[in-house]
Amino acid sequence: MAGTLAACGSSDGGQGSGDSKTVTLVSHDSWAASKDVIAAFEKQSGYKVRVLKDGDAGQAVNKAILTKDNPQGDVFFGVDNTLLSRALDNDLFQSYEAKGSERIKADYRVDRDEHRVTPIDTGDICVNYDKKYFADHKLEPPKSFDDLVEPQYKNLLVTENASASSPGLGFLLGTAAQYGDDGWEGYWKKLKANGVKVVDGWEQAYNEEFSGSAGGKKAKGDRPLVVSYASSPPAEVVFADPKPSTAPTGVAEGTCFRQVEYAGLLSNAKNTKGGKALLDFLISERFQEDMPMNMFVYPVREGAQVPPEFVKYGPQAKDPETMAPAKIADHRDQWVKSWTSLVLK
Image 1 (spheres, one colour):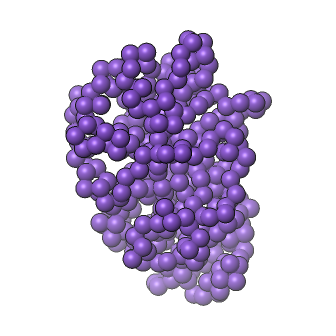
Image 2: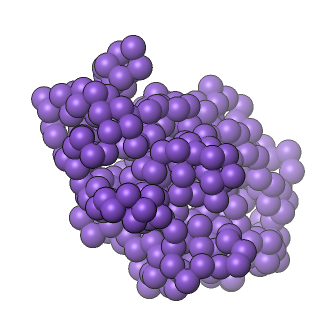
Image 3: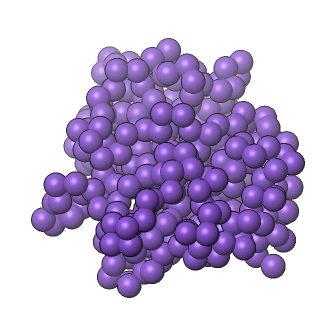
């Protein structure tokens, strides 16, 4: 691996590169990596990494498409399976099969003929619950989508706007996968009648409205159910001081939708060789094992070790809802339009 990167680093960078020794990664605001891990890549490859954060995932993808003829960087990280078709249909990426791709778990590989994107991480969008609330009210927490429309859970759930938020869209797609093209709207009518609250994005839902998170407690949030991630409970443990012996939040496993994030070499990247070296590194064992505790996602590389906190407090859903990218591409915009008129009006 190091030899490959060093060979890349000794080259003159990319086609028409203004600064062949800098490689620029464009991403959403949730990008994070350990300094020593990035430093290792820089030392091995000879490239300096510049990171440009560009809002939430939807905003970042849209901006990358708008600027694709003169991109802000060389590699884009953070387009997920809910938005992948939009990026591919707009020719955002050029073909590159990253070194080590054969080590990526088969379930996560897409676009195998053209290799325009490389899977980097995965996570599950799921309803989280506030354990204390349900214990205090002697109420069983919900386990499934069906449970959420039951009267005992009235006015307890907060979710994100599916037209603006990645977890909000993932939750909508989960219901479409569960109830089908003909059944999801009827489900959302029941959810609306049962008092679901919709807010703009994850930050507001989780850290202001949800009673179970550290932020939500401070903000006096009063909703004990929130659409978040299966990896949110370990985050509550890791960032707590003092650390609790058990996570204060749990996951309703029958409400999960599997999300996969990808990276790709931008079509008009100035430093293509640096971009290729960086993509190789993003699926290396070192980066894949560093990623969970920085971005609270799971690695996609076979054999990559997962932190014990994830195993104990935030295991992946055993049977999450999934949907083929082609089906998402065919239906997403219409589903979001229908959802908006049904739920927000």
